[in-house]
Image 1 (cartoon, rainbow, N blue to C red):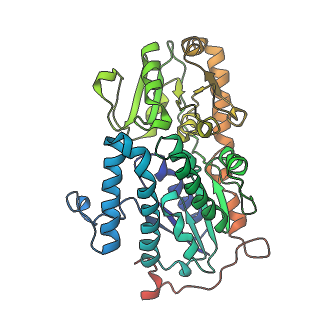
Image 2 (image 1 turned 180 degrees about the vertical axis):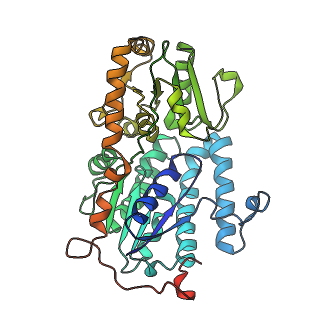
Image 3 (image 1 turned 135 degrees about the vertical axis):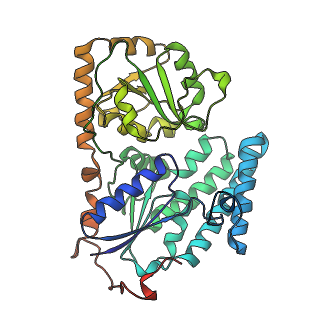
Length: 388
């Protein structure tokens, strides 16, 4: 048995999915796994009201102020968004590293996994404890293409991020095309790279054919990389698109908004899943976790034609705004739909969590190729509680 810490942010979207999957996967193999959720790191623990207040302590109070300033700059001040975001991002990075260093005894674990870019700086303080940074996406480019950095700031943030990528014992990305992107665009060495793709849980309940096909969109409806304007235009092109997620969109957009779905089983009521994304270089080489959620119910997935590496995701239907309606109408043929649905579900089986997380078994194996435990930690008494 190994003792493993997963540092993560368990929000209501995709960020909370993979940490839970990692915990289930490793616990099923006899390991002791702790999740440390940093989503409200700066907030006071407690009920709804207390959770909005800053936590005590100078570091957490400074982080609270930084997050408040960032929300103001990013959402409400266009000039500040591009010119000031960098300083707030770097402050957030250093404050989180400092707080986590004081909050967790990293040396008490056999492996520390970080699932969030904002907290990855703490891995440099792990000492002899092996570390794995499982990056959702290349951070500096994500922020730059979101219009929050100048050219000079982008270069500086890339250098900071590259130090994090190179400084961890093991490095993975949520999708293999992001790893290729980091190798090509960041020029990282790749010496510590390992595969650890996002996965899914194929559902026993599959979608069934219906004419006209109903389309579902699942996810954040405001993030720039999801291109909400494109989603709005597609909904005007085809009337049978339902939107689930958050935050609630402006009613003037005319979306068929269904709120935040409490269960993915709602996907079985549809015939097609919809992915939208921006056209910047990162998202062209990117990945959407909702893609696999759709596959897990046997839904063929409508995905922008500018997204590359679709050979890794069989069961996908590339579209442009000009071809969108005709691509959907082709799925009114039951034989075509069933053939593509079978491809999508088979792809989900190949990308089940047991398959995509399999590299963790080798990482935790004792012996020359694995990561041996440095020492046993008592399971009882004060030393068995390494998270303060």
